[in-house]
Length: 203
Ligand code: GRF
Image 1: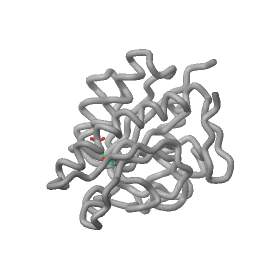
Image 2: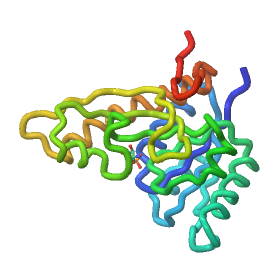
Image 3: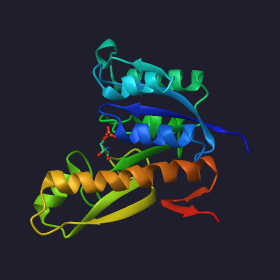
Image 4: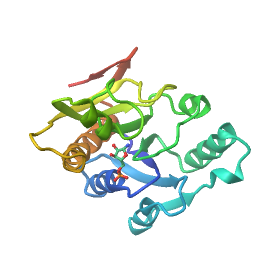
């Protein structure tokens, strides 16, 4: 089976990106590293990507007329570097239908809550303040909605007595670092089959 090229979109510190890149370089994921694109100039993920020997691009939203035009530039770059899979690793910008259509069922996102509960930003805080006893993380394919796409994997994390948002977030992040690379591994091994909104993991 041909090795898939895995590229990344990131806006921040890039810990999820780092873990996936390490799995690719370590051979646990049957893939190759593509490029990393950020919409934030100061994203730590950009430096990390350079450390991994990857091409890293800051694409400034201010240089584009609208979101469609911005996403068209992203598509162009990702295609230029022969991207098979796009991993949204802490990418804090909504992808347009133009982008989702170009990479249908080939964009994986990691979300720090058990979807469909608590979509959108500050999901750990939303769940904590709601008073849930269990939260967790979800990997899913991105569709046109906000955190609504077909679910690949989930991991549950209990909320403890005297928990804090920071403590809960850290324990969820630990699970993200397991769930995201595993989801990418399954994709690269062609083990994910999407039927409607249900993802089946082939044996
Ligand atoms: C993670 O909590 C992820 O679930 C969310 O954004 C955060 C990114 O963290 N989508 P990092 O940049 O991967 O460290």
